[in-house]
Amino acid sequence: CKDAISGVLMGDEPKDVLAEIDGAVLLKNVDSMSMGHLAKIKAEIEEKHAVTLDLDARSARIWAKDGNRDKAFEAKEAIEEAMEDITTVETLTVPVPVHLVNQVINDSALRQLQDQTGLTANVAKSDEGTGIRLTGLAGAIQEAKVLIERRNQGEGADYLPLTPGLFSKMSGKMWADFQRDLSF
Image (cartoon, rainbow, N blue to C red; front, top):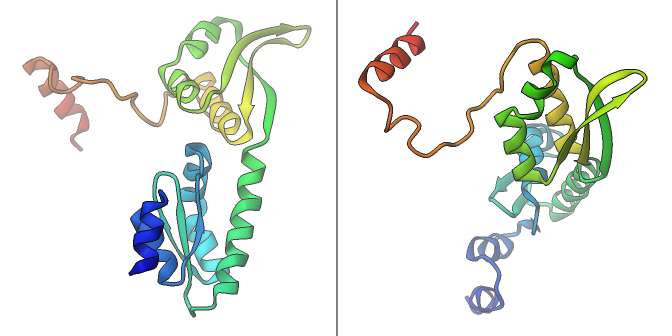
């Protein structure tokens, strides 16, 4: 109990302090892009290393299923290596047909990705043609590349940008149309 109180007073999250007392290995101060990647590979890490992961916004708690903390530390190292790959800053140019450049560069999903990750997207012209030059974390670049390639093929984003009032301010007719569109 004394360790828990001391940890919380020193600024640690109560959940992290209690997990550590319970035998968990902690991974703290994880950026949102890395945490998103970790959420995607969570099941794979749990199965491969025989651990249980508990993820929060900025930290991960790792328990070995057999109680062996060494396994939890090995899993933590594997997670850190996986995150290292996506936290490297890179630059990539994704080809875009000239007639789609404005639509792609102004795509709301791409803008949202830029806001969330610090990614930059600029129009680039070269002898090979026109494209969007992406600079940022490797993980963010891969997400943006997939998004741009889908947009090039006429598809939209996988998610809607969060817009306050998008549904609550919708007119009755639009709401009925929306409901009909969603029905099978």
